Length: 194
Image (cartoon, rainbow, N blue to C red):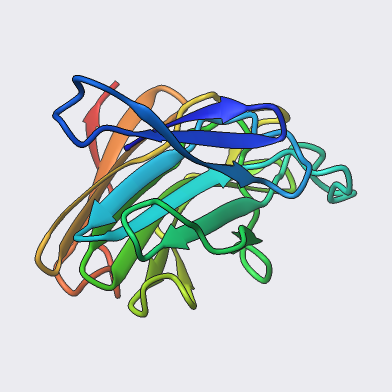
């Protein structure tokens, strides 16, 4: 499966012969708002998950760039998808042009993204253990990077069993932090580059 932005949403195409031929599989309506950041797609068996950041007309008065992060799921290999829904309601909204990272393993879905609250950029992790029905949020960074705008880069995410590793940039530094308990807690971020 591949997905690409289309007017008012995303178009998904599928190949069942290793990329030799492609068929339009479905399109995702993203509730009429423009998806300005290309979506992420991940699968586990026939379960397919997609996530993206949307521009929304109603902005936070304290943060003009913060946008909702949306999610949709398919249980039939991407032929049909659930209705897209904002999963950051109750959690920090996303920096709109910073790519998110999405990893799926069985029923566990993890999405790392750069948050924007009062123009302060941090890195957060959304975790679902019920195939995307509900999510919990954990702030991973404590960078206090104030920026009225968008740094145009987001966190990288890798998993191996219960080990979760995130890598991200802040002003003049590249950092990494790891969890050995599935994202319940993280090590102190280490500077790994500049």
